Length: 327
Image (tube, rainbow, N blue to C red):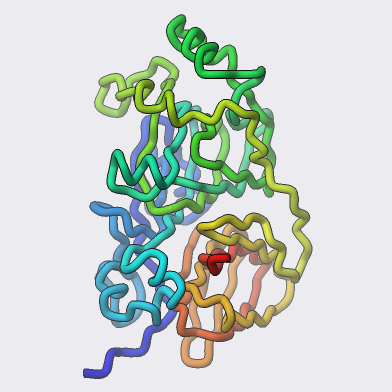
């Protein structure tokens, strides 16, 4: 039986209420959200939160079903060789009305041993930052496990956290083991490995949505923390009508496309699905047999079997993401 044509795919956002969430995803990014929505999971293969298609003949079908049907036509041959039928990346928009918990994530080795999961390498692209908004990134002084534990035992961990001011258009790479938190007044796009494993080490002494204190993971975190100063901020300069590499890692490459005129993209050599996150303006993605509109706050997956596309723009800024080939 011949399978239907595999077209560019949109998914229903999965809105996650958080104690620290706000209303910006509804106000600025078109999400049909009520309450303190902290995260919009745009494309997810995480068990229990698998995305479902919102456009075309596959509407309502889960991402996992499409992967099983189309395999490397959807994901790319090299992606299937590395990750099998697991979708390797998770795409989110995040709105922090309050500070997130101070946390870190394990790498692949630890996550596999303890949680049968991928590790969590991630990056952030800042979409909105209120005046004096900041991130927590690592420690503000030389640190080792013994010193860290002494501050932790005295409930003085906030005294050793390093903060960094942010503004719209900044980007950061968060390696496993990096102590970090998104600060109040920040909205960002997050691209990460498919993982929901987080070690929370401080939560501002506040209860969660259910009124109970959220679990901390200080014992699990001790041998995972990277005590070195992180080199998290990414140095790049956005240029109009150019593809600018923001970040590349073993798991994802992210480019910025700031467009005032149409752009042709040859994606035939990538051997990976390509995801476009529209972080400003509007765009139309044209392929030989399909056209899809992309508004601010929307995300689109281009199957790996596509080789070229054209982007029409109405002041669009897009994040273009794919899995790089292994070296």
